[in-house]
Length: 324
Image (cartoon, rainbow, N blue to C red):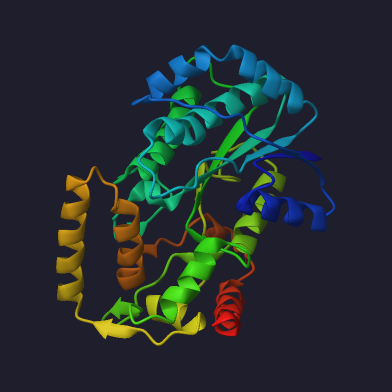
């Protein structure tokens, strides 16, 4: 079975290619076209896709012979406010790939989305419900909704399954975000909302890559019980406190009431600045309170993914100490 990974040179895409290669799969790495889209609804996204038939044709030629396409491209920029770039990468590209996949005879499209689409809700789940709170999360939510919009319309891509994977806070050995987390853990700002036992959505890129491989290899049509339409990356059993401790820090316990007051004020200031600080404030919120999630499809199926987040964080902390 041949796999095509769009965005294969990126952080997640390269990890997916490595997992597939280790499993003996034939792979193809593709670059994503640069797109811009100001669409505000799934219908607008599809209208924009209608005007890019040449791009769809080119993508279909590149996907020829592939059984599974993984969309690991997109703008991973939670702090960005450039809606046209975010919309093109996170909403329009998935629709173009779905259309191209249908034309190329692809069996399954796995679209890597983000748990950010469900925003501040206390418990993440695998339902279509979204509650985005920033330009980035709205673009990812629009991508999900645009894929669902097409599959519920008359032009349903017959023979092509679409699976949405909601990645959580993905970390890896070479990711700048992970290095930044290690620096934060060692700083006086390292803190958690008391008692510090809230589950953290921080997880490893290795687990995400293996989840993608399993989903692409599963037989059966999406939605019939074998493979769901939306899969949430499971957490790796770390709390907000143990995340910072694994990275070499000793977090300060702060009163929860104080933390919520600070966050409320920070979001208010960010709103006045056009949501420019929403991404940074959200990272602080996750550091303090984490985010719980349901026992999803992987739990029901008894799928055990590699839990490598602790070694990744420990290694990042060790590198920081050597450089300091």
